[in-house]
Length: 344
Image (cartoon, rainbow, N blue to C red; front, side, top):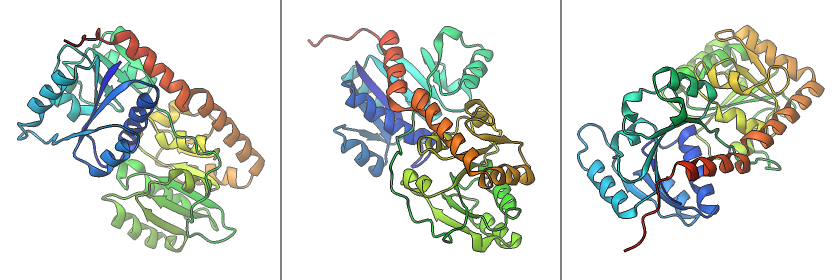
């Protein structure tokens, strides 16, 4: 197949990371893939090192009058059988054509951007139900999960935490949606435990101030944005997903891959992924006490934590590793692809 993968997202993020992994995996599986991305030299370099030739366009706001005609010309020249537009901005700029146009959603987005799409792909079953409830025909909405890298055997990173202290890890953008304020309040109820948060964002100063006010600043390390999730996970005892709003939770899949026990706030994605008490612990939203109790339950019962980590790893191997997810993607794309246009 000839596949155009069109991403106009941010420099970092869960969807952006999965876009790169899937694009590379499709290419390695023998598909002919054209990555089209918002200008981002680092992303372009990561794709190019795997033998891909990404095209970088502006993908700006309403005043960007150049990207859409340039993308249209590029697609007419490339003649994909399937064009996949990742999220709103890409869908807004991607024209209909002789190709099958697929909109890929990783959240509860405004569906007005996807009117030209022939099919939609969502990465959770709840999102599929929501889209169909908005009036999309069920036969044109498909559930395809993300896959996470295999972090088996990755050497641990240096978290700059005390030797012998229980080590907690959280990953994500420093934004209110991620609930790191709740996690800091939970940490105040866990004497002796220490926490590393890998991420950056607009809430950094407020979180540092809150840590100081709670008296936990000496037990918290803000690591900034990191690309070594596997090494960070390898170094922790418990992974915590404190998000108030998390449509999927790539970070849960990564923790499972690294065979680490997970405690998560019961937002949308983790609630769908986690089998309570077996592959992780779910706790109520906006409850530092419940979050602290969940973390403490695993720190004080290593055998339970180990069993939970093993069950998470088994779930990752069965459903969220590259091989099973890539097979589902290729099967769907084969079924919906437009016929190939012959040369000449």
